[in-house]
Image (cartoon, rainbow over the protein chains, first blue to last red):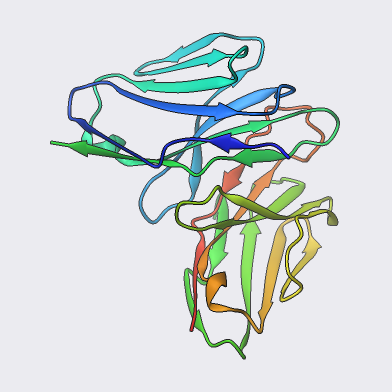
Length: 112
Length: 116
């Protein structure tokens, strides 16, 4: 089956950039997502990228997609303490039946 | 109310108990999901319902029994669970499973289950 892998933990200082990485195995992925889970809450979609794109930028967030290496990254510029959360990478293949596969989540700790 | 709501938020049960988790969505969606979140493991899809019909059972043990009476409500009935079933159980909804949209999932806050 499809696999999505990401590191479990990342620590950065407030004001620095954070880069969270993810690799996936399904070459037929249509959409790739980043979800954010704040403490005590469910997951919330942060951003997504369609598989025919290489990059997407949304304010402090930059998503980079390398389809050849099946690598997805999320860069958060000027990281704030409010960015502390678990970030889940996910992918789906929209071939008539859509099922989203998630990674383990990367816990981002922002040090003041 | 808006979004996806789950009850109870916390549940402690013995291995011989029977309990149920409830999920309700107010988004007009047609697909609903149960996911299991355990530490250091990928978020694990358990069940999918599309227009009240079960379309996915991801090899889940029979001690977990889902029920979807309508597109807005989803239950997870629990009986004779094991301590390793302790986890956060997340409910989610989406427009449907056709793949015609972005596939965004809308999650509830989860039910934290502890099995003693």
